[in-house]
Length: 77
Image 1 (cartoon, one colour):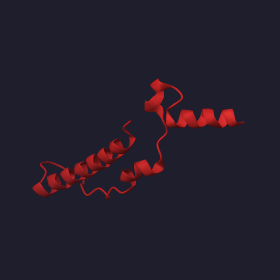
Image 2: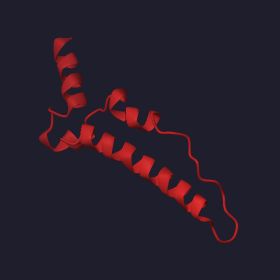
Image 3: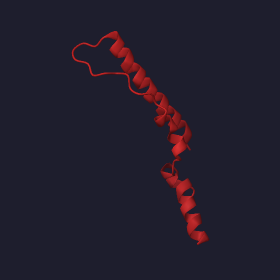
């Protein structure tokens, strides 16, 4: 039983196979940036967009980028 548990832990942390580090498990806490994202503020536009619509879209994209950067920083080997 101990060997099976050891194998499972090594597979989860990526240490069982040196080439498998990129397949290691991720904790839910590492993905917290996605859960903390604010609600999107951009709305569908028809025709030319206004400065306010563009700025809302830009703010949404920046929030997504920040969340992805936060996750990437935690899961990089």
